[in-house]
Image 1: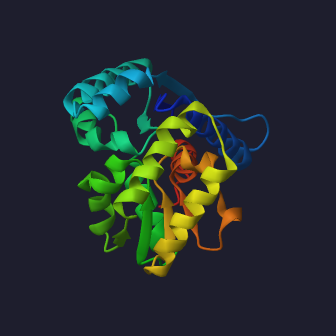
Image 2: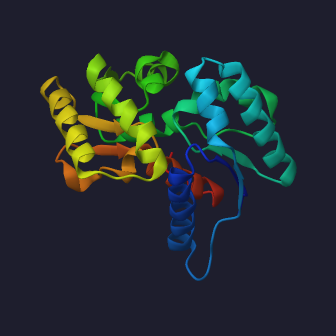
Length: 233
């Protein structure tokens, strides 16, 4: 079994999901008392969020590069960055280490293609929705990406940082997300990417008939399968 190196804490709320799903998947796949060989480096999210808000992406990259190097030194065979937004600096991290990064957008794109989705709505932080580092991974695979309008993007982002990252789950916020999804369905979305690892804490497939692609779950499941050489792709 390979050892998974997790860079977590962004936020720690969704890192819990990663740890749980990875171990559940390994247990289900191998049976018995099997669990994942995992190393976790959990950063101080306040430092990362400050970098995000101030556009200090190079500074945030240095923080995560340090984490990745420590995980590699400790024996990790590959790296999983437990957040969508900070994949903005994934290339910088990859260039600084000699073990692979399991990229969350690549995994998500592969699942979309497998399900014959051509037009997909993307929900996430304002950085993920508005900048190209994530969307380009999808577009380069031939996918059409829809994002909410500016006001809805602000609302989605605010709920992520002010509520979900603090473990606050509000029924009103769930309904707000569902209403935004409904608008994107009208525009032609065939599926929805829950492109922030906290969004799955608020809404799930049971809340809507359109297919959801929960990136935290997909990323964690693929990490587990990659660790036991049973990757879906």
